[in-house]
Length: 575
Image (cartoon, rainbow, N blue to C red; front, side, top):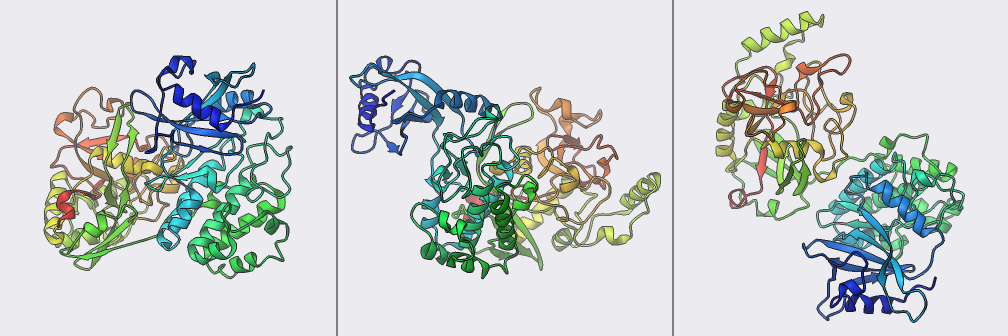
């Protein structure tokens, strides 16, 4: 088949504005988006041209039209579309491959051509983002961190992108990453086939052939991109010295002559950084054997970079804080005790009952409120007398040695507090800081526990293995387990966390997960996260991030604590 030129496609898209039924077989509700000069918004590459389209509901799509033939493309895209319809991730877009969809007058026998319909991804390519932010080391560090999260998600998947490179990675306005261009993708249904394309030479293994076509073909690309991003974040001048317009630090020849290229000497001089050292080791492994199939995806993990603003009592201005959407963490000090708040960017999620929730950005406590912070605000800890008796009874009943009084030391979460106690604490905290800290709404709590826009869909907050992230046996100091995707600790286990909401409002709530045990639920406030007392040796009754509890506002327990939220509001900005 001879495919139309970019100009012929453009003319067909323009004509479809007046009579879409004459040009589209099924996509008759789509209309082109035009620029200020009256031309369709589009971009083109070696194999296709992509038009920005809008349907009658206002939803934006990308319409990919092919300019060159590719053997096996029709069948491949059918298999890819079938695979991706079951994958729900911010890192990928849904696609629909439609044969004989668009009529283009080519003056040949072939006038009906296939198209690929995708969600439009607003943002800029990874290489453009890097060069735009080359003087901002924090943004570069956050980019490396976010790519490590993408890599940890993609590496264990049964499919592979097949052509990972900066042009195929879009950085959205909120900093999240999305992969585009699935022409070279591998899915399990393709097992035994040969690669249709090998990807960019600067981002593929130097010995890759068409026989290398399985779920591991991204391993080398992930490794070299991560190594480049981390090195650039440490020393941004490396990009200007060794990079190029169509790649990052390394070229195909650099992989083949690793002992002779100056770029490797430059990277080695930075190996005092432990994360770069680890990534360099991973790169050497995949360079040697082509694959990381014997290595856990966790080896690609990186720590979230810190950028903090310290506040004491009154804050002169928070405009600097809230105007900067990239400020991921704020550190406050109250009477000598510091605590951190983590940014949760605006986003949407579906609750356990299927309802869609959309939230504006807000800050949430990196940890549960500690004994130290409670004492700095309230002057003393809650009464622990009954709490101590309860704990000792629990330990003895389970043949566990009771702990020492260190349970009440500064880094443990404050407990034995009621919902009403929380509001007395908030009133005094807000008086000291001049801000408007609150308890989280239940939706705010759950979105943060899921990992916000960086969620990997874990059962617990940060892992599918409760032992990685949660204490469900005894009370422990905060932040000893690994954090979730946003860098937040202990949103599963340790202490149940009071939320602002009533336990039940209507039949659409999580009735099947309610654990209020016969209480008058409409008179109870929500608790989320599960406590240290939910442990069972076989994992039974261990609460997931969807589980709910509740109690009366004046009830307190050794299982109840709290976590702060700082809304991004006009009141806080003007403080």
